[in-house]
Image (cartoon, rainbow, N blue to C red; front, side, top):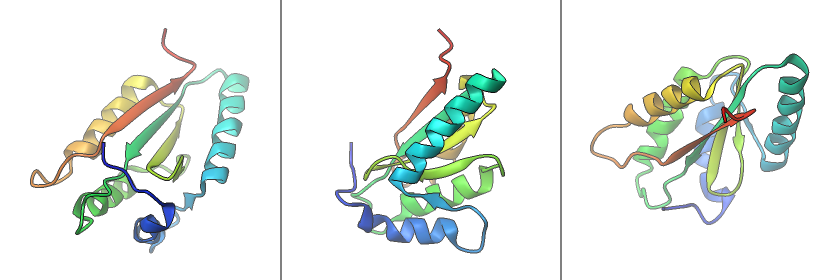
Length: 132
């Protein structure tokens, strides 16, 4: 797995995602706070909550994969979704009212939309409450 060593190496990613749009990228602290709030909301309203984590590719010298990932996330985000840094290597999407199946389908779409000449980003889907 290829990872960024420091979050400041991802400033271009944050700037591109925030550019010309209302989609903002939450900091690690903000993102974890949003996760807690959305979990409480899911409990209160008895609905699903999914989170998709994308591993950023630090070995992508031209940032082609990361740039395509930016565009794919921007094209699929809803006004109720949140995007933010989970840690220095992973960016996540919080997807309220989204089942594991729906989040997996979205993650696959985003990853598969990456140009075939570049490596696909690794992603993981978490759903609360779990489907088990």
